[in-house]
Length: 373
Image 1: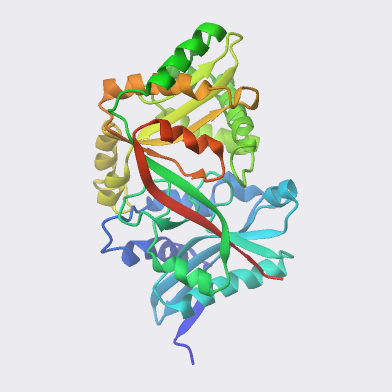
Image 2: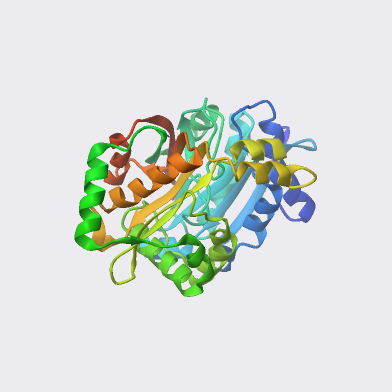
């Protein structure tokens, strides 16, 4: 008889056990970056996306000790957009034991079948905003704060349970203190002269609610065709992101590009790395987590290259060269040495932009999928 039992997260106490489990599991891992517990509580109980998504959470216990966790989700907007009946799993963490993984995945699959789903894929978030993609290469590296870290054995466990690759995302480590490639420089000058592009003042953008809304409209348009499995923001999600993210955007490291008619056509949003600060904070803002984070927000030596995109009508016309030149000029002023790119689907030609720079592969992460009916 199995010594393990699976239990659904049903109380605040259960939720905190669910959230804190990875802190114990990765206690001896120098690469793992813990999320702030307060952010996890918000994502699992209060985020606006839950207004249309379903989700259930479970833990596997060995006596009173948590040895695994999983969250299963259904995003009807995703299924309607792509004509699928898919559930997704995330917040998947487990000890190296196939029986534990089988209990977690099997319970998520059973719920998905009850809800009429015929496939399950992950690890994913409710939508395209959160952490996604199981790490398959680059285990020796520290990820950006918005990316999953997992032990190598996770991939063996899900493969043994019948999952296969759906897609891979690639991340690169870019030498930001190297000269801007000459072809990027030339193309940037040519396009700015020909089309009279100009840059938005970031501080002014942050104060202009209408311009912020335009920015997120451009975000939806830019990523709709470029980002695999993308689900456009709802108005409620836009308001939520505008409130939580836009105040943190700085013109020191980010740029937004406009055409001569004042329409936003491209952007590059970057943040100083807070991964080491989060490691020191150990999931808590208090008593000293806030101090580590505040210091990190002023150190651009390692910068996370979070989002860059171009509206559809300007894609594949070299516009990225314009905002990349601006970013590289800013990098020199703020002392940026290394840039870590956000995950980009390997089939997207936009990922090739990094081959023009001095860069090297940093991480590869995978979405797995399985038929359940």
